[in-house]
Length: 342
Image (cartoon, rainbow, N blue to C red):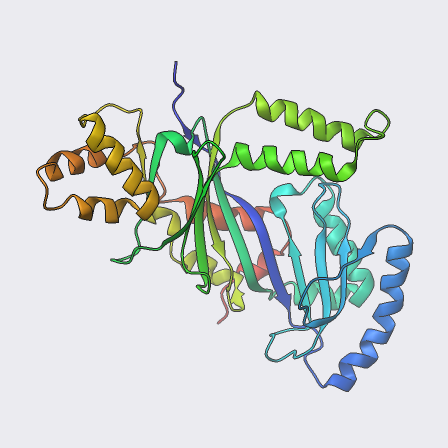
């Protein structure tokens, strides 16, 4: 029996924010950095942090805070151009992977570096640089779905991913240089690939003795027998120093997604027409496929086929607000950070 797909609550799968620290002259910032460098070295020696070497970094100090959730927080201090970069500190993390105590650890490390009072004040006015919001749909597979992304009259699909059997694994929408990108992909396949890669990178030896390595195998076994998941993701890549209180005012891009269930009830097409329509949808997008049939004798049936299979369980109207609530509930930021400026 086919289970009804169930969208989950949105999670924050990526977050980067700027703190307006040491925005004065280069000489002033350099003098402050001398003190901080010694503190960073001590944190690394203690195993609390590790060095980071991000490509193209525009910061003088780069390190990661190691977290129990397995996804470290990248901290960059000492902006090359504090005014243009809107602050001397950038922190990037994945709240969706936080475990109890991870948020407190980030705060504890940062307070030890720049001082409790200054850090607490800076966190009242963080500026968003990047935010990725994801919604997982359990009991769903892209092989049994059509995905349409509405953005005015423009077709925005620019990339598709297929597996070795030709099954669709994901769609990306939005140009490479746009502020936002949106994507839909089979999450279970992505998790399997990630688990296999982690096992390969760990090497063959020591799985029995190393609980982390053994856990990777257990995760892979669970995934193979697990629930099918489609992930819908909105990636704000260039938030341009957005204050947190303005986040709910941004466009709800989840509402632009339309989903169709190919296994649902509705009008049927003859096998050749259905195969051609689905192939065009997956190659060029739903809008282009409907346009291709516009002046054919199958146009009415093709449109009815698309409309009749659009799902009722996808209710995206409140998802962006729920995502904003998830940012607040992460406990990264104090309540004052969400208050509008007078």
